Image (tube, rainbow, N blue to C red; front, top):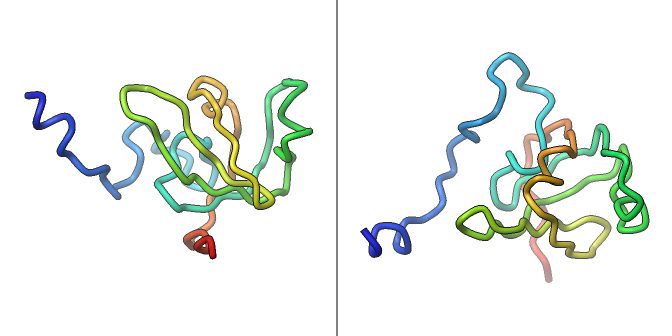
Length: 103
């Protein structure tokens, strides 16, 4: 079982907890790795806006820690780690393209 947990690669399928009735609006935690989305709304958190999380900005999911750990999102060229509970509150309009690779 240990081998199964650590040898599995992350799936590229759609997020299993995405609401089926709403394909155009998703949350940050539902993005796949290197997938980009445009922020639609953010929760009332004082730290999000100074970090660049504002409606209309493009955000890319760069890393997803296992076992419910934090996510790393890239916005305006900066990488920021966010807890999953906060990432679930950031609503996105999903884009259909992948993020540009870092140089």
